[in-house]
Length: 350
Image (cartoon, rainbow, N blue to C red; front, side):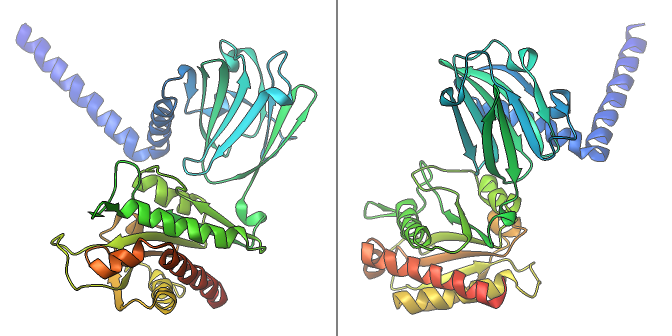
């Protein structure tokens, strides 16, 4: 008898396994949304999670009058002055924070509009605040207004506002220092160059939107970096790094290299962009031209859906070049070269 029961349990377990596997294969969207919900729960951190859903349609009351817009009813006693809105472009998450917090916002208050652009939702209480977290399906710019006790959010594609969209990545960060030579970390050099580049774009009056994977000592995941470019449908994706000899020892090897996606065979390809970047960085810094490298072994290159170039500005394992890379004047030259390369790429039609 026990043997028969055991056989039936084994058979049923096998059937369930097949059903789960088939469901994930044929309904990947269900699986993906479940993963998104789990990731969003981790984002809550120390907050007290009240509710989360990977099915926004169950929370948002659909309204044809609110196309690509949400109407979020504010809790009683909450005004515009009590509300803070944060658009985290790197994770494509909108945080709506309001003082006090309620026990369960989704149960007590209404959200109306369109949920088509929302992948998952969560509500949690963090200290003295209530927080609504909306994870979106792509990068959006926000337009908000307050009217009669409600917050209205418009989700706008960046390309509807700007002529060009760029994503700039400062490689490594936080505990991921990259190469470290004579107490100088690659993460710091990468960030310093990107900060100089940001100054140039901050002064640029053209309708160009630049999204940065980091502007401080943080460490977004590789997937977050490349998905920022993909989900912004960026015209260009530029990643800034610095090189070192494979042995880790100081050598005479120096100069600039740029990596590209070998699988990108478009007319305005990753390789062509890499050529433009290499030429311009070498021109402004005076560094040695060490050519292009195939880069599909690099995650952010092979998974990028937009033209990508990973610039290895210089070699940290060359004493002279390390001194240059660590100087503000050279960082400005490198940034100027990248800026010029982006402008040339736009002139070429990117």
